Structures are given as C-alpha cells and as structure tokens.
Image (tube, rainbow, N blue to C red):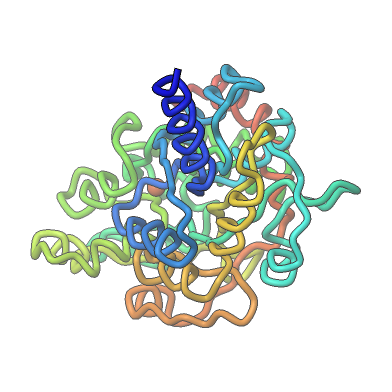
Length: 344
Ligand code: FE
C-alpha cells in the first residue's frame, strides 16, 4: 500500500517536471545549416527547448492538414510568400496579437491583419536575380526579367523547375506586373530559350553557367552569397566567371521573396510559440539571418551589413512593392499556364 502511494507520488512529481519543462514544437522548411545557432540561442536565452521537424514547404502544409487537431506543431517556418499565404487561406495558422511583432515587422512583410490578429510574419527577404556568363553575355541583355524570354537569348537559359515555390512566386509576381496574357507569352518565351530541361536547384544553375552548359540563370541571392563566401576555392572560381544582375531597376524592381513564420492553428504551447516568433524579430536573430544565411533582415531599426550581399547588389537596389498576398493568389493560374506552355 505504501509502495503504491510512493509510486503515485513519484509519477505525480515526474509529470509535474515534464509539465514544467518548456518546449516549442517547430515545423521548419528552413534548410540552412547556419540556422543552428539561431535555435540554440533561443533555448539559451529562454530555457525553452525546441523540437524541430524539417521538411519542405509543401510537406509541412500537407502534414498539418493530415494531423488536424492532433498536430503537435506550435510554430511553422516557411521559405516562400505564396506558401505562407496558402497556409493562411487553408486555415492552418492562428492569427496572433503581439505588440513586439507588429512594432518590429513592417506591414508589407506580414499577413493582412484581421479582427483576430495577424496570421503570419515575414522575418527575412531574398532577391531572385539573374546570373550570366560574363564572357558571352552582355549585362544589358539580361537586366530585366522580360529579357529571359527574348529571342536574342535563345538556347542560353537554365532554370530549376517552374513548379518550385521560388519560381512560382516569381511568376506570380510577374503576373501582377505584366498581366495574365503577357505573363503566359513570357513563360512560353522562357521555355523556348532554355538550354536544357529544368533540373536541380539554384546553385546547380549557377554552376551550369560557369561550366558553359548555359549562359543565363536565375537564383536566390543567398545561394550566390554563399558561393562568394565559400571556403571551397571551386565555388569562388565559379563566382569569378559569372555576373549578377538585380533585374528591372528602371521599372518595377527586383522580385523579393520572404521567409516567415506563424503559430499553428492547434498549437499546444501557444505562449512559447509567440515568444519564439518575437525572438525571430529581435536584432540578434535578425543578425543570424543576415550573417548566417545571407538574407536581408526586415525588422525595423535593424541595420546589418553583410559584405557579400553588399558586393552583389552594390549596396542598395530597387525591389518590387506589390502585396505578397497577390503572389499567392496568382499561383493557381500560373500553374495552369506552366502546363499549357510545357514548362516542367
Ligand atoms: Fe532555398
């Protein structure tokens, strides 16, 4: 009898201990090894342990849907504006109120506020820029997105899959700037200009330009900065051969995508989830985005200079100012266009 009581007491104290241990469950599409410091630093500062599940944007959204109310997810981190929009529209996030976040993140980088709060916040941006072979291509022939489809660049263009979120969002943005008809004609022109069928990631396209397999490619800026800063001399040799241009400086500006986060609809550790998002907006975490993964921080008052980003853009550049939700809304029509023009 005494033994049983002791057991129960032990059980009770064990469950008390686990109730006191603070955790936050993270579903993350951030695929950057430099983020480890970002996470460990949060735990050090708050005592909140992070359980992380890594997948890509689509995998995370599908998993949240399948898990429903039983989902253990507290925080969702995605690396694409259209996917953040998708998560919001599909009701996978819960709107939150946080003065810290609203003060830190400018309105253009978060979801539209509803009566219940804001569904997601962007924490960093990345440009989608054009990379070209310095020897055979003139910068003036590739300084707009439109020219990727120009017959003068026939047989020169390398791209990753059109259905990858980074490209879907770029094309969704172009549809906002050029309208539906022109965008479909543009996509057809890009397909006609391809040097090879789409394959690989952004870094593979840059390497294909350096190796002469093609002459023009498109990449997110952080992949380029990573190569510039690489300890591997082969990577730096690649970057010696290619030029980087921030497109559309004289018109609507270079396409920017965001990486951002949200609190999961059925978060069990809601307060910790908000604490984590607030941490991501802090100057310290913003510095990790800038220095670790070569992204531009978005929080107000955070001014961090990354020499590789500076060298690449010449310091400042003009970026587009369309609402990010418009990019998300255009995705379905873009995917239909890709099917029609045979863009794999
Ligand atoms: Fe990426």
